[in-house]
Length: 499
Image 1: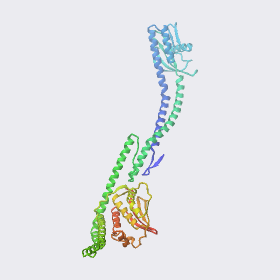
Image 2: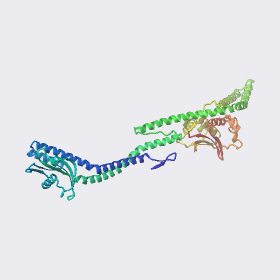
Image 3: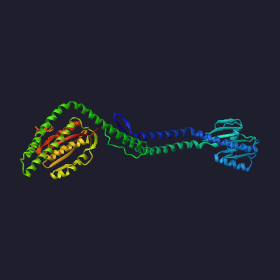
């Protein structure tokens, strides 16, 4: 099985390579065994037969020297030796008076002994001499084509002058060699087939962790560090998986630091170009927005001083107006300080990977009493994990501003959505209130701009919330916006999903 790699090269799977290597190894081993069996087994067998004949000769010669050769005890011993090694023997005394034979056909053995002694080869089978030590010992191969028999013979004289002939058949080894080769071939085929299956299973067991490690490395290449290796191999693959997990965590931390540093660098460059204009605009807007509450506080305070409200009810009303306007001024100052820090780059943007869905669920839980008090229907259907790269605290501030506006302007329904797009997640907050006039859409992000000034004034809005949204989203270099529908308005912002 072949597969495409990232650079287009064709590669074979590890499982296929292991099966092919096992097949080649076993087939090669079987071929070597058959070749050795064919070309060397007979030589080895003849060598073993030579050794058996030599050992029998030594014992026979020793018995001749000690005059044991005619004893019954030696006869029994020689009989055991001959039966053990499948050897036939004939011994003839120097005067040809006494003959000892251990053979199936004694006449054939005697004729072969006389033919060898008289060197008569005219009517006998061709021979090939392997070793010649005169009459004392001569070793030869005999090919009896008439009977289809092959023998290994040793003949000569003993130390007491007796003549001997020993021989053993070689017919069985040539036949058995072919049978052994066929047997080895059949067994080898079975071993190859069963072994190939075992190699496939073993290769799958080895290649599966390697495949998982490969998939994790591909995701790491795409800067996705959520995948972790989980295995129980208790070997080098397990160690490699643990090292990759550590590498993944280190890379994720490093990329987070790099994104933070890169974001800070971009902000520093933009900061120098915006500082002067922002300062002038900020002072102008603050002066304008604080003018009305300060005038109200001053007027009601002077009225109290001059005794214009003598009854307790009027004084309480004057004091409540002063306290309310002071509280609005305090909230406005807090928001202006937040906006100032963002626009002047004094807030550090710390990029990290977090679950935005869980963040939204947490905010909705904290706002539940207010939602029930205003009898609003809030829907958020996302139940799983949705990981993004952003500053979690600033992201929460953006969502809080959108959700707060939705609660103030919605007629009953608020719908929160997470939409997956290429390399990002779009967070949408829809409310069923009146659409924003088209001419006001481009200006709602400006500081202190209010579409419905009376309603904004009614719930204590300062017109700074959406300006804070714009400053945060620009500090994170992400898109944001608003979209009108026939039945309401949706505010949205994007967050990265890829590192």
